[in-house]
Amino acid sequence: KAGVTQTPRYLIKTRGQQVTLSCSPISGHRSVSWYQQTPGQGLQFLFEYFSETQRNKGNFPGRFSGRQFSNSRSEMNVSTLELGDSALYLCASSTAARGGAYNEQFFGPGTRLTVL
Amino acid sequence: GNSVTQMEGPVTLSEEAFLTINCTYTATGYPSLFWYVQYPGEGLQLLLKATKADDKGSNKGFEATYRKETTSFHLEKGSVQVSDSAVYFCALSISSGGGADGLTFGKGTHLIIQP
Image (cartoon, rainbow over all chains, first blue to last red; front, side, top):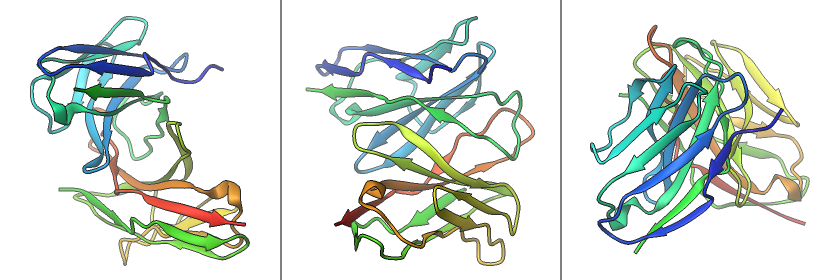
């Protein structure tokens, strides 16, 4: 079974631009979560989608948004990029149909975003 | 809120040494606990998990026991190898009865094993 794939792997943008990242979950996984990883803040949860609906959201500004399609693929968008948005953005998929005590997530390799 | 605390390192050990990476947590609820590993240039891989108190997760020679009384989930391995060099993340997830909760991660511990 193919793992979680993320495209592109690397991106360079300038301040003020916007960017869209894509994530394809493992076949059969309907939940997709996004995380931001930076040296200073570590790994932080952005949001989670299930069946095309955002179910849970972390503490990020509205410039960060996402969506999920009927085939469970997900995109996240960052508008008006800031230097501090430079990070590794990780996508994770799960079979979780509802919140539960067991939440095993499978991670993709990430998209490295650099904002100049 | 929820939080996870772990030593950040780097932790440098010689091959075949005993490894302990401490992890403690604060949670508003009854969490599931995880250890993830990140190799250079890769995403995170689940190493082991425990979903209730006194559970022991194990995988690839690594072990961790869910200690509710001390709110800890320390990672151990009896004899490390050079190939274990990576960053290790302790994480928790809370059951809310609603949507799948995001994982709360520690800062990560960079482990370096020298031959």
